[in-house]
Amino acid sequence: QVQLQESGPGLVNPSQTLSLTCTVSGGSINSGSYYWTWIRQPAGRGLEWIGRVYTSGSTSGSTNYNPSIQSRVTISVDTSKNQFSLNLSSVTAADTAVYYCARRIVDPSLPAFGAMDVWGRGTTVTVSS
Amino acid sequence: EIVLTQSPATLSLSPGERATLSCGASHSISSTYLAWYQHKPGLAPRLLIYDASRRAAGIPDRFSGSGSGTDFTLTISGLEPEDSAVYFCQQYGTSLLTFGGGTKVEIK
Image 1 (tube, rainbow over the protein chains, first blue to last red):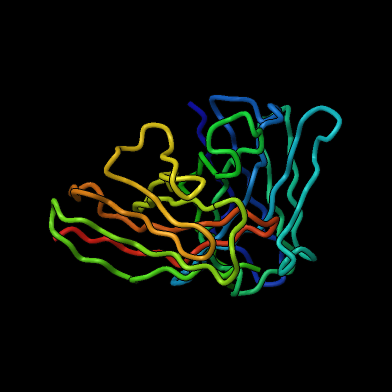
Image 2: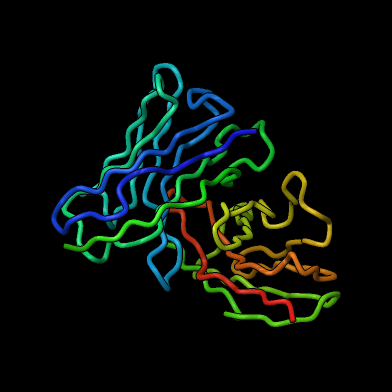
């Protein structure tokens, strides 16, 4: 059974870069059937899709980001560690949120194609000096 | 961007009752690419329904989804105490995924 676990600093200074890692256990990140995704939820607000990375053979590392923050976001993958990461630069208090990683099914032969079937529990990141 | 609006914000019901949760979209969602999730504090969100009406693996049949276009519903028939949670909808019909604000279901 695949599980995802977010990790990283809980406190980041304003204007610095927020860096989080999602470790995938119980399955390979390189299966080619999933988008590995980051989502966040500021306190009292709804969920916001940040972006995703895809890896499979020759298309390893292809990304897509939310236009609202794409100038500050980088999502990358380390298949040797079965991890994918989020870097968000020039953070402000508005980036304070619970950050989740999730797996989105992109293989149309699998059930629940298109939906996110596995999530991490989330990690809280506060931007403050 | 497709904006999803969920109502009500909070639903307080007794065990055994039926819960009806709504999710409205600002634009029609193609191919009924809408999912529902259950989220309990401290736990990972759990996929309940995909393609608007298909139950995910292992989900009890008291959870059902319906709708198309811009109006979608999650129904929980025969509420159990463990159904206390926040439920949110999400559309995946466009490359920019979006989520509803959530409905909190409280069990009296």
